[in-house]
Amino acid sequence: MSLQFTLAPEPELEAREKGRLLFAGPVDFVKGVVAMSGLPEPDRLEVCFAGRSNVGKSSLINALTGRKSLARASNTPGRTQEINYFALGEMNRFLVDLPGYGYAEAPKPIVAKWQALLKSYLAGRQTLRRAFVLVDTRHGVKPVDEEIMSLLDRSAVTFQVVMTKADKVSKIERDANIALSIEALKKHPAAYPELVLTSSEKGDGIEKLRAIIATLV
Image (cartoon, rainbow, N blue to C red; front, side, top):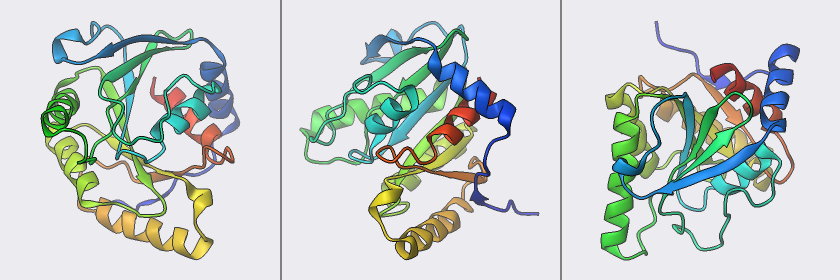
């Protein structure tokens, strides 16, 4: 029996409060990693955020943590070339910001290096609890997203799609792109069947995503 993909429901009160408390605590930058050898010791659970360059990943992380500049948002796509580790709350967990993918205008050797790092991390990090794959609601799932999703399938890493910039499209266009994204996800066995619709600017879905992360870690 195939999974039924849908938008994530509103969290229960207990999960909502757990999420609030988790992100109300300290969130501190630990280190930026440019090679697998630089990863912190795998002594705690972690969740990571992956997405195309300019998908709004930094803005989403800042909205989740309630900090305006924790993750460096930039108007220049592809600027984040490191795996950035943040210590999350009092629970001694990691939140991981991965390099943006799918941006071809940076120098090719640099692109190749950070794409290889991204893939090595996703394929081999034993303490990774879930990957959140960000998809721009204006565009839906693109072939470059499918490439990362297939890697996560092969690595048996559960991933959950977070639709970003939901406030930037009409309801008709939004619903159509959500439906197309769901069809794309049905091909991926590692996909978690609940999508999260968010707007970092409006705050939509942020509380829900906090609750999901809190129940994971």
